[in-house]
Length: 254
Length: 329
Image (cartoon, rainbow over all chains, first blue to last red; front, side):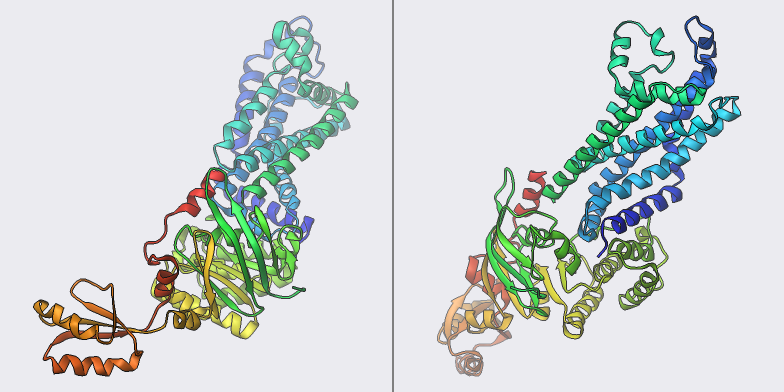
């Protein structure tokens, strides 16, 4: 009987296989690509306004947000897949065969990382084509690490919702909070240029620290690194418990 | 019960929110290597029982041990010991049959080299070699059922749960599946827990039958013993002339009590057993009464169900189980 990792590999293998054999596999990248092209292209002059002092330029500024959006939406889409598996009954096969059902969560999370890698690569490729500099050198890997953690957190959030609701109607419930967290952050200008309620909300939004640190890595000027990783780790811990809670609810419901 | 291949259930209960008790305190025991038929109408509690015994649904009360393991406290061990083909084959339409087997084997931690061997052997056994590399969305209902059975067997389980495995199958597929289930029990010593609403299926396959109605087991024994408990066979006559019906009734009731029958026919339960048929024929002849059809009927499991519940198994379902499962959502 397969243990935790055997189950995780099996679930990840199936999800990844399905991902690459489905023509719509890059769908999670479409929104970030659209936003990146629209914002980085149409709002380039924002980089010239007083107080905008991001060294790597406006394209790079927008790229970081687009990348994090791509990987978190990849996590959300994994949540949709989980909900679909429960709705069509396939999850019952997984629950029946898995000796360690926690492995199911890990399996979906691994598959989500593959999805995030693909969409992240697409967004990065487009950003490089449009002239984005990577001024931070090896600090870029710090940005990648934060993107991976963001993907894991979003996947665990989506998994918890999907396993609690067990229907594709979970889609909006997964997507809406992720969108809110993404947009209630310094998306178009740095935090110091925000005013009013959006500034207050952005300061309270834990995603802001992650976004700032990620932008710092790309610009070669890492800032708020410890808080960003600490917040990411705390989110993953809390959302792991959330996903396990969702799994328990699914077990109870049969 | 020690670490064996049987099933022991005591006072098992499953209650859903806003619904009746889908399973209301059942006790049963399935011996290793036995084929146990769980017979009942729709909504009787059959599938809910299977979901609990396969660790897919926690019971509200009672205990059960499957392969010697507690279904609540030792779920992983239970799942390692069983295979299950549930009522709706949970298949991914975008995967092929072979990919399903590969995935199922991987979930059970079977090594990569063994997966192919086992997969090929099972595909051959269920007759799906030619369709193995086709996506499941193109499979017929019978093919899906056969694949589901192969998936349930991929890790060589000691106990096999089959939840209404032949529902919706054509006679040929049904017969093939019966043969395979019989072979598994006979040649490989697999314990089979089979739910069905088909009397014939329980009669043909099961060593013992439990009849469940409204969440309770109302009778349990071998099919032969259950039918013998009901007792005597019946004879049904169709008078050649409808005007002679009363006269035919008058003759037949000399040999037993009249029982409900199809319109235009007369039926009695023979008090002297099947040997009374010859006397019935002679008496009809002596009265110069002609019949267009005369049929001797042994008691069926439907008669058992009728005797135990006061209702016929045909059409007895009320859908409570499904509704209850939905209600707990």
